[in-house]
Image (cartoon, rainbow, N blue to C red; front, side, top):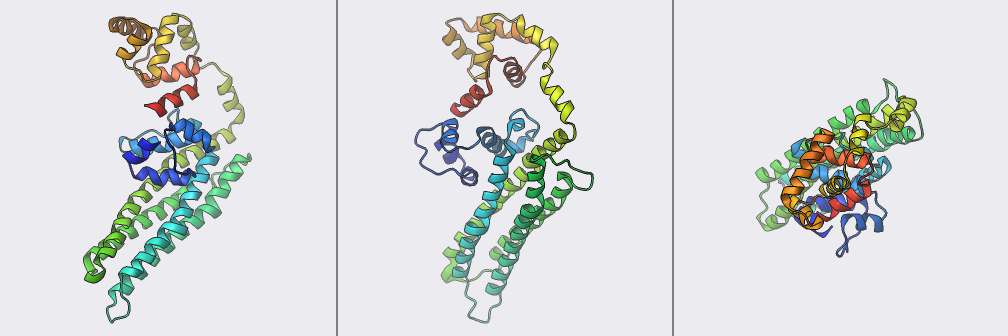
Amino acid sequence: MEDIICNDHHTLQIINSFGFTLGFGEQTVKEACENQHIDIATFLSVINFIHKQNSNQDPESPLFSRISLQTLLDYIQRSHNYFLHYRLPATRRRLIEAVDCSGGDKIPYLLLKFFDLFLTEVEQHATYENTKIHPYVAKLLLGTQPTQEHNIQLLMKKQKEHHRIIRKKMSDLTHVIVKFYKNQKKNQIMNDVLYELFVMEEDFEYHSLIEERIFTACVHSLEEKSQKPQRHKRILQTPYSQKAQTAFDQLSKREKEIISLVTQGLSNKKIAEKLNISINTVLTHRRHINKKLEIHSPTELTIHAILNGIISIHEIDSCNNKI
């Protein structure tokens, strides 16, 4: 946890919104989540999405499918509360300190007015979610079915517009400050305000992506399940693949050991050392595994291993935390 936070300061906002308290010591991600009663799959999904969002990570990935929607709702609500009740008021107080509205210059007054318009937009954004989106999701969790006139895609269409307007107002505010602020006596204070606005703009971008992609994908998945409960039940009870199951039955004990170590993230060298065999032997086993299972990527191998009981989801999470 220490490395995650210290390597990317944006992660601190995510840590806070999940409800973590600092003082992690040497805890891994898994240990920290268990100690503070936070769903690990949801936390890892959000963290990994933020780190990989530029690579177009798929919201339908296996990790996303294990997200706790209730945990994600709690995360979003905490994020709203943090921005509205702490971060934005604190920035506004610093902005008031940095400007002088006592003279005839209208620029300081306009800066405050501009900030308050931006604050109002954020409040409307949170209110819309709290009164429209979150109650809708709560009803879905209780078994209510979506309709063509009332579903997450329609609800999020307006929310995406909120996101766009908020980002535009934040950008306009920073540009106005840079262009027109002229109080040299309070210049350092305004520099602090401006820096905080830039960081806040980045954090809000991440927040928007989480809502628009992860949250929307999870709710949409829940909608589909609620519309087709029996079909979903049959899918869960149907073997993943008869061919894949048969292929796994043909694997040797050594091959299954190697699959387990590969999915834990060990290199060929580490696997060879652990099993006391040569690297060439490891490579030969891996070729045989890929040929028998007809797979060609570590990700696909991991999915097969989980579905066939060679390694558990909890073991995968534990390995990811230690990498």
